[in-house]
Amino acid sequence: MIGLLARRLLQLIPTIFLVSVIIFSLQHLLPGDPALIMAGEEKDPEVIAQIRAQYHLDQPIVLQYLYWVKGVFVGDLGESMRLKQPISELIAQKLPVTLQLASMAMVIALVIGVGMGVLSAVKKGTGWDAAANLFALWGISTPNFWLGIMMIFLFSVQLGWLPASGFVSPFENLSQSLKASIMPAFVLGNSIAGVLMRHTRGAMLQALQSDYVRTARAKGLHEPRVVLHHAMRNALTPIITLGALEFGTLLSGAVLTEQIFSIPGFGKLIVDAVLNRDYAVVQGVVLVTSAVYIVLNLLADIGYILANPRLRA
Amino acid sequence: MSSVLEVDELSVSFAGEDGRMTTVVDKVSFKIGTGRTLGIVGESGCGKSVTSLAIMGLLDPASASVSGTVTFEGIDLRRESESRLRDLRGDRMAMIFQEPMTSLNPSHTVGAQIVEAIQRHRALSRKDAEARALEALRQVSIPSPETRFHDYPHRLSGGMRQRVMIAMALSCDPKLVIADEPTTALDVTIQAQILDLLRRLRDDTGAAIMLITHDLGVVAEVCEDVLVMYAGEVVERASVGTLFRAPQHPYTVGLMGAIPRMAERKPRLATIEGSVPNMRALPAGCRFSPRCPFADAQCRTMPPPIREVEAGHTTRCWKAPLESLVA
Image (tube, rainbow over all chains, first blue to last red):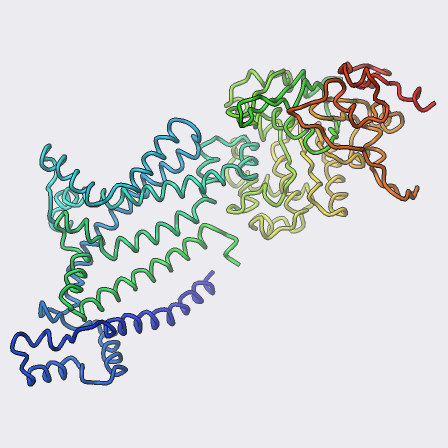
C-alpha cells in the first residue's frame, strides 16, 4: 500500500514537469508581444526594452522557463501586467471562493446524483426509476446560465429569499455565505448530479445482478445492507473517477455561473487574463488548476485502492 | 421418516419480452428427509437451479411468478412474509452456489463475510462471532484459517473459495443446505475433495442436502435419492441404488450412457440425440418424445402421467417398465 503510493507520487514528477513546459510554451506560441501591450500608446522603444529586461523577455526561452520555474518554487508566480498585483496574491484571493463553491456543488451533486442513482437501480422499472432518469436528463441538458437566471428570478426577485449575486466569506458570516452561494452551487451541482446519477445507476444495476449480491441475500441479510454494504461498495469506482474529474472541472472555475451570480472566482480571473493577454496570470492560474487536477487524480487513485482490495497487491 | 423439506406442485414462470409467460418449472414435487441427500439431475436449462432459488425465495418477484407450496420444517414458506424468509435464509436453510469465483464479495474479507452471516442470525458479540467463523473455516479444512480469515477472496483458489462458501452456509447450523452445482466450476481433484467434505458435513451435522448437478457421477457419490428433471418436469425419481440398477425413463438411461467409464472402453460416448426443447414451444405429448428412441404416436400426442413402477420409484413414461422394450 505504501509502496504503491510512493510509486504514484514518483510518477507525478514527470507529469508536473511536462505540464509546466506545456503551460510555459503555449503562452509563447500565442501571437502578440506582451512588452508592446504594456508599453502603452506611445510604444517608446526605451520603455519596451526596459520591460523586456524586467520580465526577462529578452533572454533565451529556456532561461525564461527556468526563471519562471524558480519563481514558482518560492511561490512567486510573477506579477499581473494589467493589475500590477502579485499573481500569488490574486490566486489566494480567488481560490477560496472557487473552493467553497466547488465543494458545495460537489456535495450537492454527490448527495443527489449518488442517492438517485442508487434509488433508481434498486427500484428499476418503477416510477422512482423513471423520475430519477427524468431528473438526470434535466440535469444534463439544462444550461447552467438558464437555470441560474431562473433561480435568481424565482428565489431572489419573486420570493426574495436569497441574494441574487455576490460572495460572502464563510469566516465573515457563515449563514450569509451559505445563502449567497447555495444557488450557484446548486446550478453547478445540478448538471453533475445528472451525470453521476446515470453512472451510479449503471454501476449499481451491474452490482445488484452479481453473484455476491445473491449470496448476501441467501445469507438473509436485510436489503439496505445488501444494497449499501455489498453492491454499493463495488459500484464506487466509477463514482470516484467521475467525482474527481468533475471536481477538477469545478475548481478550474465555472465561468458562466460565476458571471451570472457575479462571483469573484477563478473563472472570471482567467477569462479576464486571457482577454487582456495577461500572460503571467494565465500561466499562474493554469498551473494551479493543473496542480489541482494532479492532486485530485492522486486522491482518486487512493480512493480506488481503498475501495478495491484487489489493487492492494 | 419426517421430511425437512416438502415441495408440492412447485411451478415457476417468467414473463418474456412480449409479455408471454414461459413456465420453466412445471409442477415439481418432492420431499427430503432429515439428514438425507437428494440429488436433482438434469441438463442445463431444465429448471433445477430455478427450483432451488424458488425454494429459497430468491427469485425476483417482479419477473418470476411462483405457485405451489414449499414446506420447510412445517413452515409454509410461500405464505411467509419476506422478513420471516430472511430470518430463515442463512440460518436454518442455506445455499451454496455454482460459481465460487464470483459468489464472494471481492471487497470484503472472507472472515468478515462469514461473521456477517453469523451476526445476522445469532446475537453474538463480534469476538464470539469471529471465533465461530474461524471454527467454521476449520470445519471445512481450510489450512491456516487464522490467516485466511483476513484474506480477500481474490487471494484464494476456486476450491478454497468454495470451502469458504460452504463454511458460510454451515455457520449457523442449517437444517437444509441447497448446493447448486457446487463442484462444476472446479478441477476434478478439487471436486472430489468438496464432495467428500459435503458428505462428511452431512454426517456430522445431520443437515439435509439438496444437491443440484448435471453429473450423475456426483449423484452416485453423495446422494441417497435422485430426482431427474427434464424440460421443467420431474421425469423420474428413485433411490440412487434403484435408479442406477433399473432406470425407468429413457432420458435417465441416456444420461447414464453419457457417463464415461474406465472399465468398458467404448469407441464413442453415447449421446442423447437432439437438444433440449424450447420452453416456449414444448412438444404436445411427452416432452422427451422428439429425442426418445422408443417414442410412438401415443408419446407424441399425450403427456404421460407420473407412474409408480415399484415402491418409491416413479417415472413419467408411457413405456415403463423399460425392461419390456429391451426383451
